[in-house]
Amino acid sequence: MRALPFSSSVIRRTRRLWRQYGVFWLGAIVVGFIAVLYAKLIDFGFAQFQAIQHRHTWLPLIITPAVTAACVWLTRKFFRGAEGSGIPQVIATLHAKPGEYGSRLLSFRILFGKIAVSFLAILGGMTIGREGPTVQVGAALMFNLRRFYPRSNAHIERQLVLAGAAAGLSAAFNTPLAGIIFAIEELTRSFEARASGVLITAIIIAGVIALGVNGNYTYFGTIQIGAHFPDLLPAAVALTGLVTGIAGGVFCWLLLNTGRWIPAPLRVLHSERPVVFAALCGFIIAVVGLLSGGLTFGSGYAEAHGLLDGSEHLSVFYPLLKMISMVGSYLPGIPGGIFAPSLSIGAGIGNVLHMVFGSMQLPMLIALAMVGYLAAVTQAPITSFVIVMEMINGHALVISLMATALVSSRVSRFFAPPLYEALSERYVTPLPGPAPAPTPEVPEALIDDEPPATDEADAANAPPR
Image (cartoon, rainbow, N blue to C red):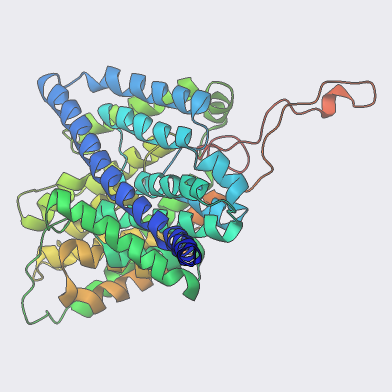
């Protein structure tokens, strides 16, 4: 009879440990596996597009517009909240009420739509990355584990979302340290001691799963930097930070201020016939892709990797063409990230700057420009230089990378506010409900039949950005 209280105590303690750690560990394992499978799916999809494009050079003029239109129709019809990179949705959930907004932006339906529609988009050659979507997928997976808690609360839900998002980035890039910094700098702008151990453990577990499947690797390989840095390195850091800061700031301005540069007829077209507008964007992407010889299609990973290892030679116009394709891919509001395309644009800028600093090693300039452009777009300099440092195993360049990121992010701030935070604000709105029926007491003109826009392609003023 005396064994019962001891047995009951063990069961209660086991349940408490499971809820404290087991749920997070289970979620991190699942996030790691999903991140790897999603990466393989995206790589497979783009390989299919490349095979078709190589056999039939002009076929993207048909395929890309059709796929873009289909992606926008599917997203607007079935997967509202899955558009864009997904990081703004995670930020909005963390900064608002996790339970309420997570149920809308981090549901299993959104998770499925994010993966399925982005796969369709890469089949069409869209300039999108998978890393941002992996952040939302990881956050959605962990958020839905709140059902294991009999008395879930906002604190638990926020921890789950934060751990899932950071673990997703860590597994996507194989950058565990960057996952921790990303959670602190970009997602929460703070770090709670109570969440630190749980967060780090989830990131490590997801990273271990990714390594177990893919093997030990660095995203872009290891660049070889000599022991002696060139005398022109300080000048290169300053100029690279300035150029990438301007380029990244202009990109952010274009996305956040479309009402000021897109012609009025196109804004009307986007507002009234978004699928047709998407097809037009897809046609532009296809034309740019053909002009570049097919190099602007996809995320740009192969081009950046090729520049770093010396196997790729790109035109000086590559960064501009890639940016046009990236803007065209993002405007319609299809699911897809901007991390990998930003790194590719940065690599192209570094290739151009090599014309100025010809005595410097090209991989060094490319690394500086990659971190500079990514920092300018995200305005998260610490996350940016840690990501690039881990992706190229560039610990010897840590000070130079850090300085470039700080300069470029500061320059970018003159053009636009932080992109992800600005995009997240449109999700922090009352949840849409059914429109009230007209009554004599409520004039029909005052009734709004449309729910608040949640598409990342819709700017704050509703027409396209």
